[in-house]
Length: 136
Image (cartoon, rainbow, N blue to C red; front, side, top):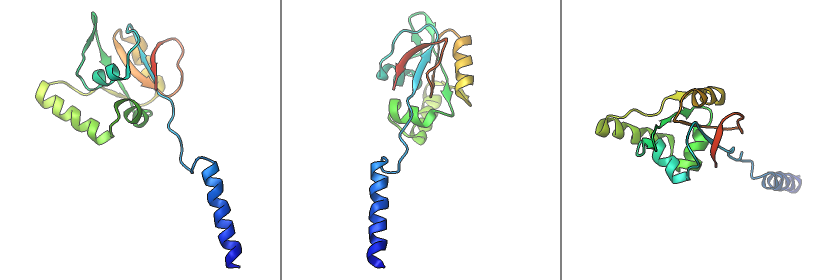
């Protein structure tokens, strides 16, 4: 009886490993913009951390997406939500800048970016009708 229970556990573990270890993989993140050309991951990071505020003549308007923020922070900014919030708290006191506004969904971010020249945001699914400046 114990042997068959051990065998069953081993088979279950093998199934989990074969299925990707039981962990969900992070979704793709698409960075979209209105009036901004291609951007490197480092440029996107600088924009979302308030280090860069203009692209040519365009005032940049970054916007966060609550639904895709965890993937964006992990893949693009390479930081946790707590570290991101802390960076913006420091930036607010030091430079008087505000963190990007947060929209609740891909649709809200897409609408904001389409309506505002210089806007830059990120979504979790490939959007139509807007310029994709990077896929991460």
